[in-house]
Image (tube, rainbow, N blue to C red):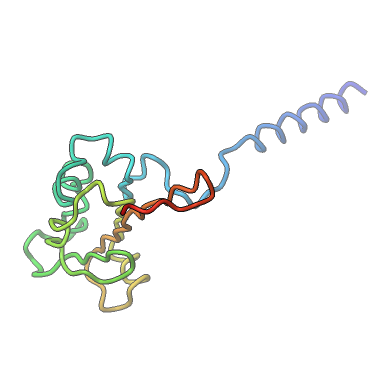
Length: 145
């Protein structure tokens, strides 16, 4: 009798422990090393700088060749996409103000090829720009005129 109660209690405890695990989410965690978020940029000293400087300070590995590839061994190592459009090489980051960016996502060689096909470069930076959020406090969108 006591052993059945013990087994039932142990089973309930095990179920409770497994049920309290981390929820599954596709959103990046705040410390995802392959994602740079607006909040991280704004809370750093790089908010007013260009995106290249912000990435260089906060995620320098975004600008380096993937592991196993010698620096300078290939002429074009990375491609930048801005809002799903191919924008060019890493120099494009200098034309963006860091605080206008919602997210920068790093895709390594395999992910880059899976997303953009066999012509993909060694790595890809996918930049998503911030969109102004309309003020609808009173049920109307306010104009900036």
